[in-house]
Image (cartoon, rainbow, N blue to C red):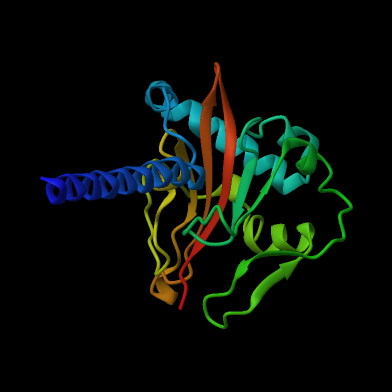
Length: 212
């Protein structure tokens, strides 16, 4: 009987350890995504026209360097994430608050924005350099193709925007590429929006293009 009791206690201890581990994982994993709340239902109620208008306005602010206007649209809780590639990684991509975005102008500090997939070298650039290479590399206010929650061109980078921002909608401002380059010169500015009250707030600015 004594041996049976010891076995029971051992099994109970093991189960408690497993439950504690599962609870720890459950509490940690949401920190690597934007939590899915009632915002998902709100996002479904936002029309494509509203999202497109917000995206074109954001692209205009980025093109003109109007960081004050851009800052007013930044998500007040999460800030805005900048990703140089379609695969978003909240652990390594840079995120900025509205106040930080407002101070973009004149910033001369070199920041690490990610790693180049071809060479493995870090992308070390000032804000201005990064925007010129990964955000305003084309005039996305005149993008010939605009899609909502749909991606026209997919490269080697893993598309995970819906995993990282489960309660959001995204707009692709897309240059689909040219026939002469076999359409391998496509480029996308992907803007991610999350509902905040009765407004749309900017959650991410993502660059996507064909990568080696």
